[in-house]
Length: 101
Image (tube, rainbow, N blue to C red):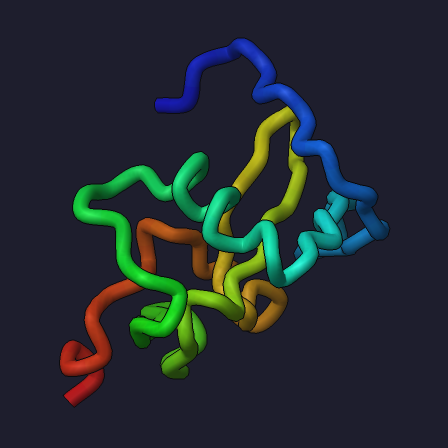
């Protein structure tokens, strides 16, 4: 369960995002800051490189880690798949690409 304390906002602008009818925000993260953000928000170890592939269990699609997105919802920052609107895949739903075989 997620603690009730809010996550600090990331130092990037955001744009509005609607997910399943719920208003959220998506951070606009420059490519040169992606590695830093991944390091800060990735909850597993080891932290993959930006060039590694993952499979999003919810969308059924592969992607490169560098394509990740970060949303702000309910006072929390979430590391999500590039296909987040399709299935709601967050970092806990990313598996090695061979998992789709």
